[in-house]
Image 1 (cartoon, rainbow, N blue to C red):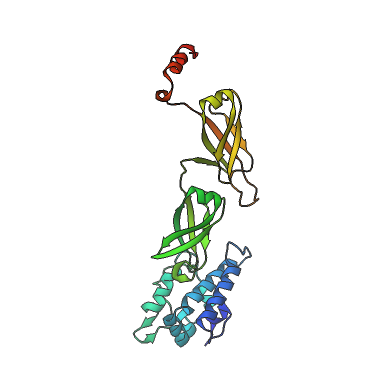
Image 2: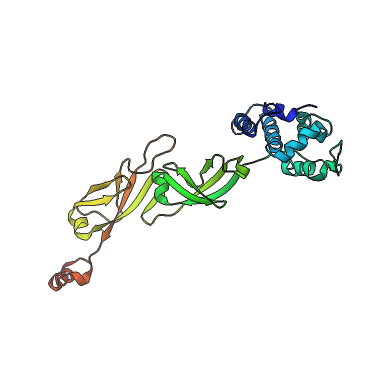
Length: 286
């Protein structure tokens, strides 16, 4: 009896579950289509996934050890896998084999028949996709973030400067713990900041007196509080650039800038002296 599934993973028939899992993960990383662009790598990746789907399940492995390649119509596993295209999920094929499609009572069928249709063969995908929303501050500064998934609380590390719709891969948290959890990241809006690529924009209220006669004001940023100079006769909507106070680019490591968009902070008329109000009404230009 050929041990084609074991040969596919490069392990012996007596290999432990841990040895099989270790071999699978090593080969899956090596032949994953996103990493390995060589001809045949994708088909090899599918074979590896299919072999692991069987050998990682005690019941399926026991059946395979008992019946061998007769489960694949007498072909070895490589030839069986190569004889199919890419249109049907492996789960359906294995379900037919192990849940009655290849057996008749206690007697194993020598063939594997799908009723004459041209079914495809695709590798088992153990990865799971999900979406998360993270606070704006975490997207800028990075840090640990806790999510609830599948009834479990999972702590994940968010890299500083992550972008909207960027994906994070959480190793070993996919389907049946054999794949990864792929998280598509959405970023909550901020009441204080806007983001434009690696740059940040923040509105800052400046007292009317400072806008008219100039002065200094303190402004909080993600890095630290800074004192900024306001020139005399500054117009509302003017921007002040703080170089390097923006978001760190994940590829280059360079920080973007923070643009402070100044807005005039008008005083409460009810808190002003009556004589002063009178003068304002008389002297302020139209």
